[in-house]
Length: 274
Image 1 (cartoon, rainbow, N blue to C red):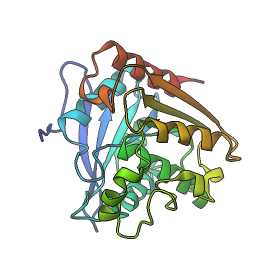
Image 2 (image 1 turned 90 degrees about the vertical axis):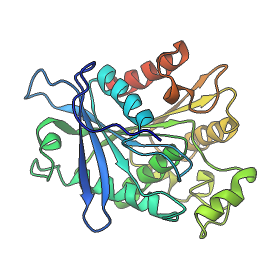
Image 3 (image 1 turned 90 degrees about the horizontal axis):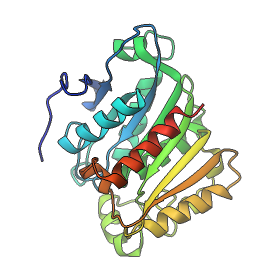
Image 4 (image 1 turned 60 degrees about the vertical axis):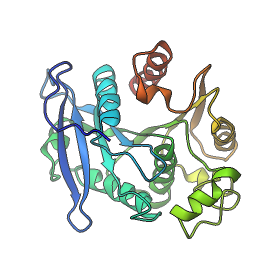
């Protein structure tokens, strides 16, 4: 896997910085910030959880770097990708816990005196979005529910972008149970089947946008998630966006195709919607 050093991207003007979120575990994150024209302007924050089946991927790999640089440039937002620890070296639910710790760390900046100046100076803590693709979408959903259940103070999660989510399936049960030995499987585990989660209606955001791809084997679970959330009693709004003729996470690997641009434009519109 190729990695990108933090620094300035001369093509877009996006700067990146790696920060340590937890000294105890060594948890890190990468911050992406667009070119700032008005230093007094506060920008929305996009918190990213990368995909990779809970066992590959990174906030500093080329795929994630290029993907987030594109979104940061087009949406004029600041992004933070949480580099959660990977299974099987770190069995689930560690990735979920790391992702939650990352959001808690961001919340420590709510008074403007957090440990990271880029967040203090340039982020609008009242306009936060969570986003993930595949396994990262699963994590982003879990974290957003946890926000609502715990009533995490300091942040306002406006929206959640769920892209080609991994919510299990019979053919992947054994794999997930290997990565998460405490899981009861796709029927009974709320992390894989939100329909059985008694906390689903506590989802801690206002809006959700669910993306599915026509040729993705995970599409039925993504559609089921959309339908389940819509009738859960949660008070927000949920929308479904399907890309025809495409497979799982196609946009991450080539963001320059027409369908990829359409998907990213939909994300940008969702973030910038007033």
